[in-house]
Length: 621
Image (cartoon, rainbow, N blue to C red; front, side, top):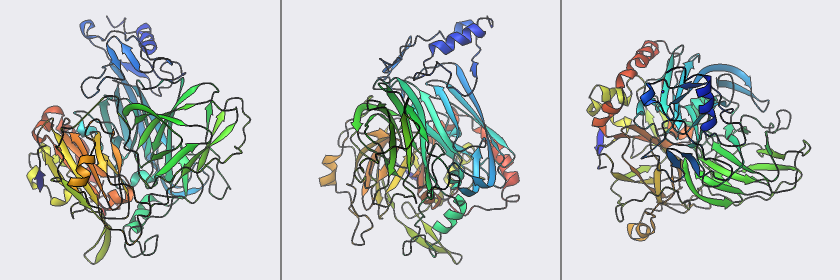
């Protein structure tokens, strides 16, 4: 069922040419140009008349707003309209393996780990704005399919590389592989993770760094910092209990998850009991400015980060450059990213980088998570000052950021016609009770053997089951508006694939959302409507839906495909909190090769369900 709304002779390409290319394509920071890239560069061979000219770099520590001068790309370039074409391909191979009783980065034993190239987090994907990224995923997991989603990457006209099991592809069967390929039309910080039930909670995730301009100057790029909750239990076992209303982790609160056993900083931390592990350390150089790429790669936990004695200058929200804003602490929801600049302007010493949880229900851990920023020349020791506890975030992200490239929606265009309601629901089927997070009364459930793009390929989307939660947005290049209403005490990080969302407004965060007297605070057009921000509002791909309240957003239909929008708390996605926008249906087969689905789906069909030891028991995403 579908709901409709309007909505480059070869000698010249020898070592000299490769060297020239490396030298002229800027890579941020004090690192030698290109040296941080983890994979070899493959030049794009083409006739002389079609070869790209060497790019003249202008991206320096005193002019980070510039990227290239010929042709001109800079912080003011709207990458939805224009993006560099470097002719460079970055190639990665990710092998997924499964390890029982794995000793993690804090010395604790995880019952079931699923790792990328034997590590957690997985290798960082690194490239420059306009590069092609090829990632071959080899699934050596014992009993799971998998798919890899590149969170924050728009996949312009390459929706079939978005990596969502049951939506854009069949899962990759054990013993099989798949290559994802896309152009980095954006720049900034993203991350990748599996999109197969709650699998990424077992470790299938890593960072993405796409170098480009920045809205404020800095000297060094420290690279990504993935901050993630870490559970010693298997994510699937945890999800099974969370999905059962009879044995919640918090008595009286069906669907409640446990606090995480730790928070890891690029996979490392001290264990809660202090018996093992070590603090992650980053190095600052006195008198220099450092770019830090913050990523919340958690399953459940949102948190506020702060660095004792220092401030953060925010220059990007997710992958959207913004007018710089300086803060002393920063709330990061699940799936969100911030690019921040840290000025090393304090005495040479060691400083705690703290994560602090809200009193509201958006995650927690059994320890006080922290890492250390150590000035070059300081002794290796623990800091002596714990710092000041930051204000309670109440699980709310700021909506006061101003994107550099302005996007506005038409005035008086928001209506409540497209409303998506969610609430916690307990339903019984076949004598088994389950916890769900339905959208408009229907929890999503996809078919791994017959993904949405397979329906598109076969021209039979009209036969898709209602519980695939498909919403048709057929018209190109129109603004589409959505009101999401949360009839619950739990705030939710909402993520849209394939687009950035313009956040027009949201309910104020509640100080005590689990107070039993709370009731829904509905959107009031006469009161809330005039307060909506339609002129260049905060723009990003993940934002918070307040408890007992609403979230108003818009996005432009400029990218054909089947695009998921879902809560990024893994348990809630497992429980069905998701819809998919089927955008520009008739254009999908013209901008991508849907025949690429066949081989992977044939492999999956040969494995599942007949050869699979476990069957789908949740949404599948």
